[in-house]
Image (cartoon, rainbow, N blue to C red; front, top):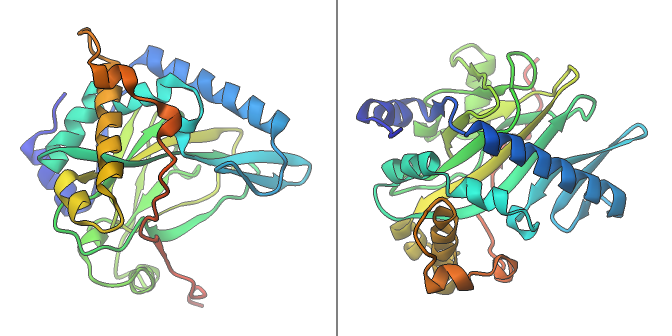
Amino acid sequence: MTISSKQLATFDRRGYLVLKDAIPTSLLRDLRQSYDTIQQQLLENAQFDGLVNNVAILHQGNQNFISRIDNLFSFDIPLFVKLLGLPLLQQAVQALVEGDAIPIYESLLIKHKGDNQNIDWHRDMNHQRDSRIFTVGVYLDDSKSQQGALQVIPHSHLSPDSVCEITRRWQQGDLTSAEVTTEAGDIVIHDVMLVHSSPPINEEARRRTVYFEFRSLEHTQANPLFSASWIQQRQELNRYACHLWSQSPASTTDNEFKLQDLYKQQVRYESAEYCFEPPLG
C-alpha cells in the first residue's frame, strides 16, 4: 500500500491520516506478547519511584501501571525495531517526507482502566517548520469511541494560535473536534502541530500505542539540536530496521549496528505545548 496524492492532500488539510489494517496479524500478536514480557519484568524488578530507566509508573490505589516507555529500543526486543522497518510504514513515511526520513524517537504509551490518564489538549511540539514533521502511532489494541480514543481538532496544525487560544475557541463552539477510533493493527499519522487529546479509559481494556516521530534529513541537518554523528546513527537504525524485512544478505553496517549504543548520545527535543489555563465556566 502506498499513500496516494489524495491522502497526502487530506493529511496536509486535516493534519492526520488513518491507515487501516496496516500491521500483519502475526507481527501484531508477537508485539503484544513482547510487551507483556516487558511489563512483567518491569513490575517485578523496578523500584516504583515514578520514573525508572525511562519508564513512567503510575500508582492508583493498590495497583501499579506502566504508563510510558521511552527509549523503547533499549529493551532487547527486536520485534519493535522490526516494526519501525515495516514496509507499509516506511512507504507512508517516505511519501510524507519526500526524501530521506530520520526516525527521531520511539516510545510506547499504555493506558489502562483505573489509571485516570487524561491527556489534555496539546501539540507534540510548536515549531516553524519548512517540511512535514509527524508522529506515527501504531495501535496494538482497539481504541474505541468514548473509551479513550484519540481526539483531534482538524486543521489546527495550520493555525498560528496557541493551544490555549485554540482550546478556548473549541470550548466556545467555534471549532469542532473529531474522534479517531481505531482497531488493533491500525496506524494513525498526525502532524506534530495538530492539537489533540485523549480521555481516560473507563472500561476493562488497555490501549498500547507505539510512537515514532519522523523528520526529513534536510531538517535534522539544519537543526542545531541534532549532531552529525547522531543523525548518522539514526540513519543506520532506519536501514537496519528495514533490512529486517529484506531477504538480501546484511551489509557490513547492518551487521555492526548495535542497539545498545543507540541512546548514548543525549538529545534535547523541542517541548510539547499544553494549555495550563483553567477551563471556561
